[in-house]
Image (cartoon, rainbow, N blue to C red; front, top):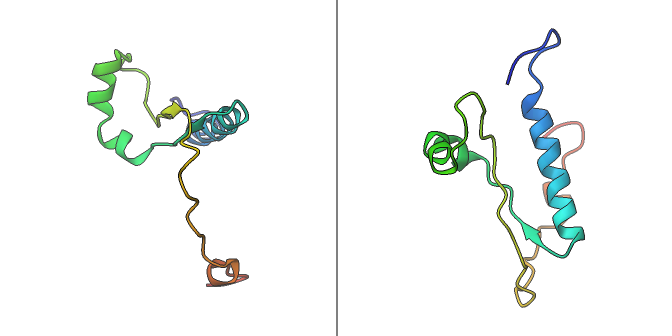
Length: 88
């Protein structure tokens, strides 16, 4: 990552790319999971395992596989209990 005259945008770019890859995986019948926080803590180890050059960053990873159709959906809270408008 290199800053530009307008600032650093590689994190936002990488995040947008990951979101699009997750959507593409689902569209193709796969499932994925965006793994980010644990990756940053283990970045040096992951870099060595995957032979990633030192001048590149590993911001996140996405394991992809076939979804288990038998998994029950987890109930989500009612929107009114988690939505805040113009304040908390």
